[in-house]
Length: 201
Length: 201
Length: 201
Image (cartoon, rainbow over all chains, first blue to last red):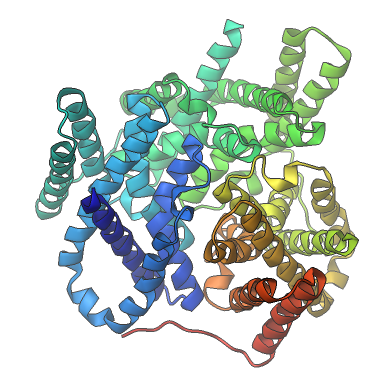
């Protein structure tokens, strides 16, 4: 399915842009921007592949992930203002990418004959750990630990996708429904400022 | 040996609780608490397995580690005050768990035909890196680099266990002696405020 | 080639010293110094081996990396003042080590049948990620993201080495030219305070 390739590409690119934006905010140099772009874009899938034992990690098997990430540097340099203003539109691509990463993570874990709950975890890890590693390298507390609810959106999408895969053979429809779930929950969460605090006392 | 399974379970649970406590201190949300619980509980063993090339990493092979870690969330939510007051008792379980993790790490490294000194390192890494990764994700300098002496306790237990394994066939006794070593050194270190500074000038 | 072994040894030692120096600055204890020495010395090669799927990671296959790193502790303790004054001379060994790490990284990636661009990345990662992980564990923004230009030196050396390997059979000469490239660029960059900022607006 070519659509998957394009969405993967789009998601990778959106993540790389997010890494570059953080690098600019933190006044990193050119090399810092490259590293942060890579870590954000491929960090989640890398951790998943390391945990499940895929070798080498997926993005090393062909060069196009590398070119996509590298292309984010000149593009974000040239269109920086424009990208800052378009953050809301980018969020859309970003969220579609996150949804797809979640699903691809589940599929890969299942292909390695891991259990459904492990597969759900691997899906969520694929989608969220790029951002976590970006924040660790930028010496910040990961955003997702405090404000963002997109981990919850991924988790929901992961459960929906895995549930559907037991009852429906229409792979493409299952994927679209799961990605739509991620998108809906994330957008609702942002609009209504949902949060899931954890304050025992 | 069923006892090993129970101590592993207990140690994993104690580590997960420690991750949740840190998340609460740092005002992380629900998802941040889950991640920190997992990283603390399985981070050390994960790093060991990645280094020695075990695939997939051990805790993915069955689901019970995952359920134990997840169970730490509601339990620490409901019994938060009680857990805070019981920190000293928890330290006991925690240290028994650390001792066991050290031994299991050594055994796994030896099973992969690595050298004795590598095995000792893998034992110590299994026991201490969960806490290190917890602190890195919480954007703190790892506690163990400055105050805690339990790395030294693990190292002593590791050396004792490996030494015994050359001279005694009584595996269970070797393990008990090694865990007792870890426990004794850690408790003595806490009571007498031992520290091993490194201040060249 | 025995020369490679000695330079690898020298580079590992120089990196371990750099980890210990950071630990002293941050007032870490003895154990913190050991961990930081190891992470700095073997972190880059470890990440490379994990990414390409080498198992176990290279430095576990023989014990001498471990002894070299451990020897950095007493040596930096005894000769601390002397080492601080000699920082410039050390930089020389350090840079030769970095150059060699870059080349060894490329060779290993090519031996795993990865593409040239992946090989270049693996070379640079081998050389720079030890320092990045050292800074992350010390809770600092990685130095290399802001001030140091040695990433650029590594990248240049990597490209030179890979380019030469297509046109020349004289492996040793190729290596010397590549290491000389790294050394020249790093020294020029330090003397002339080169920097490659990334400030879109």
